[in-house]
Image (tube, rainbow, N blue to C red; front, top):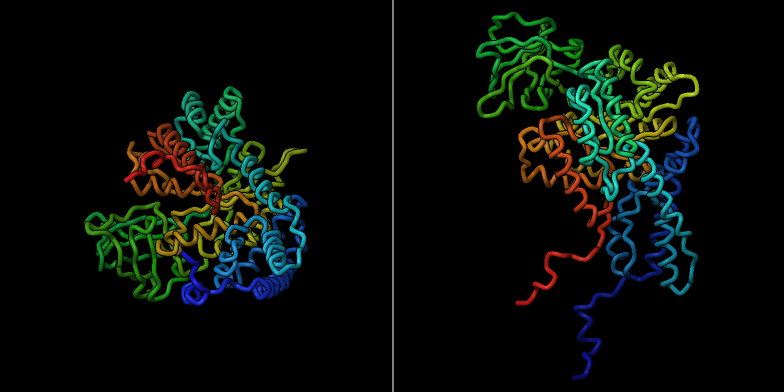
Length: 506
């Protein structure tokens, strides 16, 4: 049979993109990015910056400029020519652009030099080294993502529990300074260090400062202070009376009442209760409950209180945090910084750390806990300021953050945080409620398992406390190991599929 004529093919065979035209577009894009990068970098260049972090900060500046541009129109044309669509360039933005430009130039008949391949490997190597410094080198055959486990109180008196957690797959250990105290912390550290030596692994210790938690104070009201949708809820400047007519509560920071305005949304207890401000009075504020579940929710003291629409200027370091630092500095490998929102917060922490450093001591690393809208907006500045001064990681504190920005936006935002931190060669911790059902009840849900699999793209996954801790560590390690065969950050690893080999006939 003769080949079909070109006229017959034309209607169903659109022309491929013109490499010369595409090259011009890419060069224009690159020049625009270079100009904006210089503008961003000019705001950071005067920082007293560790030389080890400078290339990472420069790549982050380039990535921000790169992502301020809409690339969606050029990507299909690049793909049609079999070229990179620049969708995985986070750790090496400029080198990726140079490689695409060189390939396009070659397609036009004017060969150009490709970038040195090491320019495409330096960023990932920096990120891997920082991951290992912060969260351990992992057991033999461990997945790329490390496992950070919150130490339960029992680990202070049960060295065997600590050994079991590490043998099962824990790579780093977290001590929550909001609980227990210096005597128990010291015992936990002793057991962790001893277990690491016995097993032959470096097991870093993160000590997490409590921070200025915004909490409910005293509560009162009818029906055991249980509220339902459409109920009235009062927020008072002083503790409510025991026989309050309406459900009422006070706050750990009563000055926040002055920031409330009618129509503003308020969330309590990790969002279990939602309410809208109706009126401001001399005694406080009247609210209408908008979310409380079909059976209502009981108001309780010491529960989280969130004001998503308000930038809260409470100092990130409390006096309790300063007291904890007296113990933490010189003992912890990492400090978890709660409620960090501005570069000034970071400088404050480092100043307090430096006051307590033993002679010849080294600053511990800092884990920036991102849990407010303001922290998200300031994240590039937070990473650069912290990375300039010490080893840095970022924790996606999904509990408070989800309440602050809304569940609908949370999935999108955790993706963007992963991308931004990869561009800064900065490790990310995926935290809050990972495999919580398995940890507390001994049985994982399908949704939890999928969440754990998605967490593999982070550099570290955090587990909280629970009676099934070793079972949970073991399960998570297996899930991460399976996913590690298929994904590396945003890149698919195309190893052979095993599920359908030899079973495809019909």
